[in-house]
Length: 539
Image 1 (tube, rainbow, N blue to C red):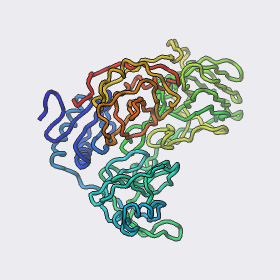
Image 2 (image 1 turned 45 degrees about the horizontal axis):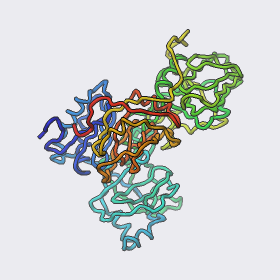
Image 3 (image 1 turned 135 degrees about the horizontal axis):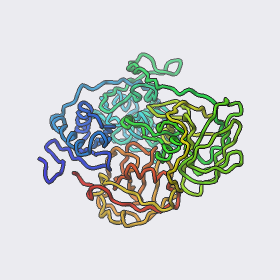
Image 4 (image 1 turned 180 degrees about the horizontal axis):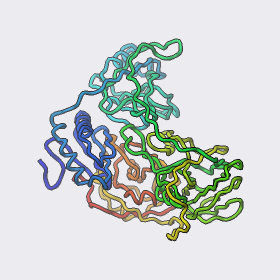
């Protein structure tokens, strides 16, 4: 029964606001999550951008220009029959070969008080289910009613876990798609391709899949043989830009990456949105040179960037523009203005000094930066390692053909440098009820700490007091989510932030003001302003 507007119904679904573009549907257990997620996938409607299952929630990401939040809430609640009845479509079964040769295997077996053979036999005999993904693209959190052990994580995480490692932690098993840091206990290795960004379905293991680990001896080539891995889906081929000319990077500064407007629709595979931290600035720079708003450019962090147009470039005129952060900019020693299109002669060097205002400037080239598209985007994901590598001296940037208009003769819009104090609009977060009060969050003037990058921005100020200190199961996350770790100091997730997380989200930055945060440098002062409903409890 629904009471006083709460979305708490017979099927046990509670719908919480997650900012202005998402809802968090909460149920009682993992079985209900799988049923709810399956039902939502089966009845998916236009305007639903992503469905991200987690331990006890499904994050429903919405395009509000297509489907209003109120309509999305009604649609989510219509899935209650599937949750109440446990209605699940037939699940796919994936067999994953494994060689039980992990570094922690013997020590873990001894800690659990069983033999190595018994541990590996129990792991291989269990019927595992992919509960959700996160941590890294294609990393599935697997659970099984057949698995009796609660495995402690390592006291000290490894700085690098090899790709293909099969591991255990808590009640979960999983396999690392790529080499990353990690604290799980390693029991084996698999040669299976767990994540292929070029495939139509990039993650081998998707929420709801059944997984069987098949013990296999290494072949002479070091790969298991005689196992059944589902054939890879047909590869999705993206239209490629015609590369021409070339921009040679001489110095990237502290950080420079290729970025566009980001990836959509792949959060459930553990892939972050990424894209420009200040999307508006990149769109403006592209418009100034007659390039498509979605085209890729170069995101330059803190300045110190130098590049030269290839001296052997064609005689075709090439235009560029810079927008976002401000600092001294020169072309062959001649000062340049930002927010203006400039011709770039062959052999001329562009030099950008340390920024005096803001953090990130965007270099747009007429036609866009030619780069390989992965999952519908050319953006670099610094956390997951997707997309082009961060730029280094000697890299050559090709020029694409995403031209949509002439170079404007004049641009009369007033532009100014990024501000050193920002007022950031935030919408309700799903877990504000875990705090004694949210008033200090809005009353305080916060300061951006030195721990600020594309993954997240840590704020300095008084610690927020939590009324509920119990552990929160991992749930879906989005850029702009303001998490509060146990120390009480908020962290605003950036475009490369994790797809799932276990810290409560007190509020969510509005989509428009996410771009303001893209220019927030250490020392920038922030105030938060409420928009939307005052309460972030179930609604």
